[in-house]
Length: 101
Image 1 (spheres, rainbow, N blue to C red):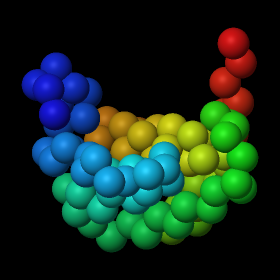
Image 2: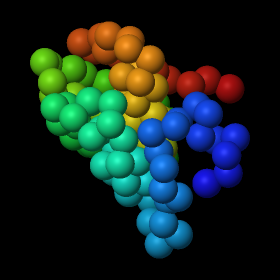
Image 3: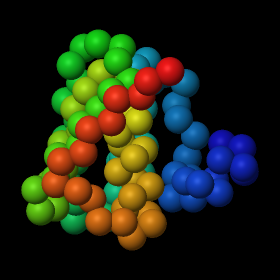
């Protein structure tokens, strides 16, 4: 990973393996390396809906979080959760984001 990317995601120390074939696999990989650093007691489930949508919903109940949405949206949701945890931001119980271009 190039150093300039480590500034906003310093807890991600490994490059994404080239054999990961979907955004959901990348999200799982990134969460697996980041959660022990930013929130070791948190459990995160990913629920992709099979679309390529960038929309996602994050639902939190205690230390359990579910990220649902399109394949790309689940990845965006994972990064949203990781950045919130890293910055000390309290995760809302229910958050939906639908990018519009």
